[in-house]
Image (tube, rainbow, N blue to C red; front, side, top):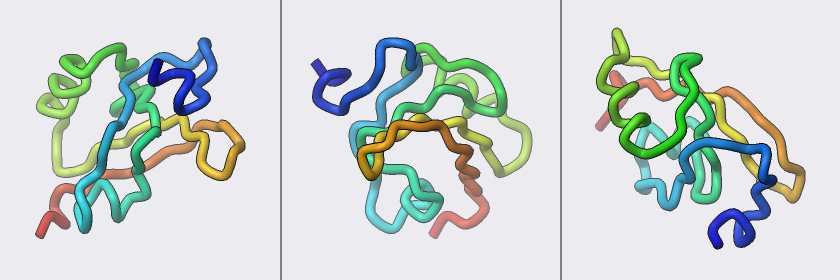
Length: 88
């Protein structure tokens, strides 16, 4: 399963990032494949449909993501700001 492949603990709930476009605002913000988006603008995310809906509802051009990552082999949560006003 994807959870095992990315070493995602069972307590982590959210949406798995499967890919990030090269030179996108998401990549610039540090989002990477294997990350799990846990919250968008402090609202819990349980599936891809919720993630899309919360992103659409966001006021302004910025999204605050709470992201679980296993980067470097140390699992942990961090905040990532996606600023769509920087889109190329």
